[in-house]
Length: 412
Image (cartoon, rainbow, N blue to C red; front, top):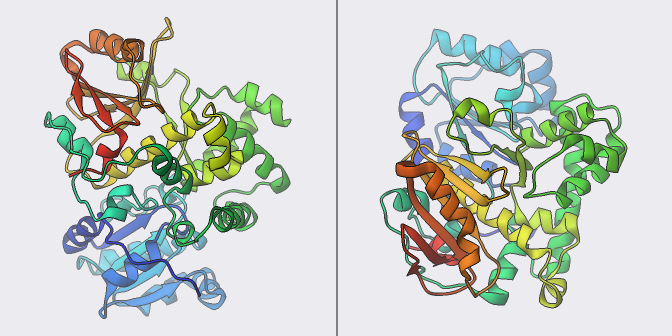
């Protein structure tokens, strides 16, 4: 079997910290992001390993969850979302024996969104997110772009990546299996199979959906609006679904870590809730496959590449959020006058960094409109504005605004 090389995952230190003082640690994230490889490395000798992808283990977990957990002292349980009833048994076991690091779980659906689970392990479990490989992990860099930016420093691009190399990285995405494939054709074949498998099998773990055959078309419809504000009624009209069903299906894909709803930044945190979210896919490689976008098209016409590049940058920043020292939220900005900023990063103190993404190597003054407007609206909360572009120079543009290469995202 063609196995992907092992990369050091930046979340590993967080897992060790959590296991030192918390009885149950859950590593959540999309299927095939590398969770099993990572927990097998972390678990070492001391923990028994069980996977619910094994039919007999799954049967035992569903038929006698209490019996199964009672037989375990310390264990790794892979793909826990397939038998959520185990969590109640784990809760009982942990209440009797609170030693830290007893259970290391993985789940490829957001278990906390399942109503039965939300409160059963409150205070006993820490959840960490493992997304597909970041560009930093692929290059062995550990510096966190967001932590540095809030400290007023932009990372230096140790390996500038521009033009065709950047396009290639964006279209590949970060799934280890896809990256181990030698050609675009083989990567696309993997991505198509991956999407089919998710829809045929994993959707049923998180929701009872009677019209599975509508999902592939719907997912392709969502791909067309990635990075845009999501009007459920309009979207539903295009694929023949009502807005309630659309909202539910989007929720299911979100639970499976395929995409994320991004809220709009507003000074008043309550008013964010009522505004239209944007949809972002979590992997630019999967998005490219759903859009049938390849390097040949990008070379001839870059018009569709901009949205996929935005997804790529959003995904890189989301990976930085999962391993950062600070606590951050990714939002976007758009006002009634149609001023926009692609990504707004907010820390708990309400300070902001605006990130604008540009697929070309030239920067014009008009590219700064959104960042300047956000800076004026946010006032003292505005810390930095960064225009990430397809170039090699980091240059100041006045008033806390900078132009920086996209490749600084995985710099040192």
